[in-house]
Length: 154
Image 1 (cartoon, rainbow, N blue to C red):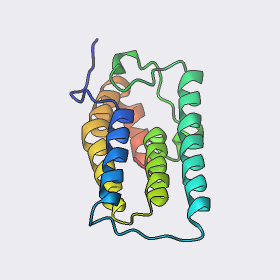
Image 2: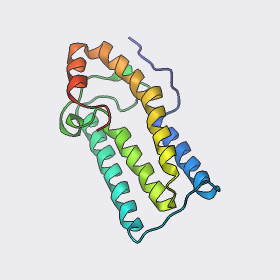
Image 3: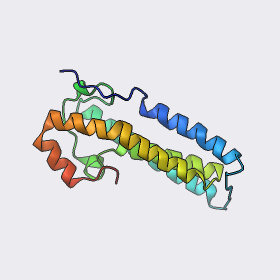
């Protein structure tokens, strides 16, 4: 059974596009640039947290021998609900948001919070909701119970 979603742009590409957009926003008259002595610490914190969360999720998918490719959902073999997935149904996307937050802090642009919000909205609509529909078809009540017990983001 082939189960595909309409979105053909991989989430890392959407993240990269968002990051480039953030650079342009920071350099624009609307950049609202700010700085703080804590900026380097926050950059490292957000980037490290994002990488650790995303890597942990990838590792759990690999351990469960299921696909990490959101465009090959027909290869999904199991519903991962333990570990980091007990706290977020989409920890890889949470990791990408944290990496974008690190970039926003590095750029020093408060305005980029709007770009991050647009990223969250677009990933939710273009990627997560279609994935949820496929997972519901694949795993039925098991996925419904998981969805009712764990939040989409955090």
